Image 1: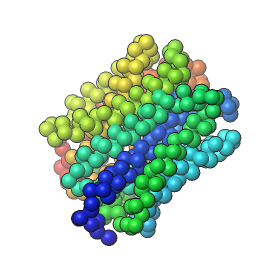
Image 2: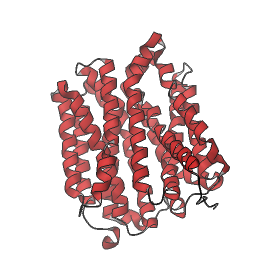
Image 3: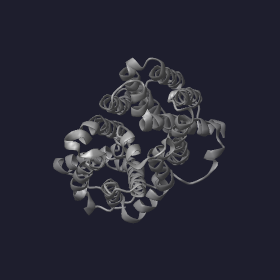
Image 4: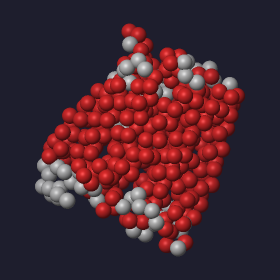
Amino acid sequence: MNPISPTRSLFSSVILILGILLIAANLRGPITGIGPVLDQVIDSFQLTSSQAGMLTTLPLLAFAIASPLATSLAKRQGLEISLFIALVLIGLGLGIRLIDSVIILYLGTAVIGVGIAVGNVLLPSLIKRDFPHKVAVMTSAYVLAMGVFGGSYSALIIPLADYQDIGWKIALASYGLITLLGLIVWLPQLKLHTKPTRDLTQSYTKGKIWHHAIAWHVTFCLGLNSFFTYVIIAWLPNILMEGGHDAQQAGVFHGAFQIASAVPGIILIPLLSKLKDQKILALLLAILGFLCSLGLLYLPNFAFIWSTTLGFCSGAIFILGLSYISLRTHDSRQAASLSGMAQCIGYLLAAIGPMFAGGLHSYFNSWAPVLWLCALASLLCGVFGYLGGRNISLHEQA
């Protein structure tokens, strides 16, 4: 592995950090931005709710399938080139969705999902390598970038689509400008071809990790959180419009959900080191998510409060779940194996959500069953979050 120069200049360090943040900015917006214009997409192609839900499901399936392949790509090409390829795939997917074809719409969305999967897997490894003493700070920064860019895009996409009637296709493709900027800023890193760490290359190996109850608690905590999060990401604008809000308001609330999901990174990361265990915190957050899901159904006039609080709960439980991977394991290899298990199963659970929710809506012609589904998923997530948050480890259960 080619070592990173310890004498990296201030300018090159700033360019690297900016590149990391721009890659992070492309890991959510290209798939979540479709939510506010989903009604327009449905009208354009005469899609059913389940078919429309597939537009959110496809990237999640790509995450589950492509995440293990990302490590092979990094072993061959190096982290820097692999992350560049991730941005190229995201940009390609955004571009081809301009073609007026439902098949191309699905294909472009799947390509975006593969690009995001590669970025999701490899960006943390790059941060661990280049910022070993600032992992928490850099992780918080890139999670915040994901939330702010994705949330802002959701809030702006309806006005953008309405501007001089440019339409939803161009509005969705416009995110490619952020992708292009990311590609340009990342170019200086391509002179390096460093391979991923040993931890990353072992993160998808099978072993005794599957035999531990605590591993399943952590996996289902993350998986159920992803399940209800991606249902909300896919269908929140439609849920809000059924509750009496207009499309522009729904887009803003959808954006607020995503921005709020990034805020816990700033609050929780310094707090976690001071807690003896995390079980009560996880349960309280899940109960709050349960109440906010039902608040959207029964008190829709306060939808902004419910949306932002749901986003905060979703992001907080996600960070708790990620922290469990380190806190419940004894060494980096064990942590990498648990991360691979949780990521694979978690994304598969998440992939079921949007399509299943769309099917429920089609059957009942109401979003009420979907919101009850989210509420129950949040509550069940709290149960596994409580079990995973106990101060025990894999070794103690061996």
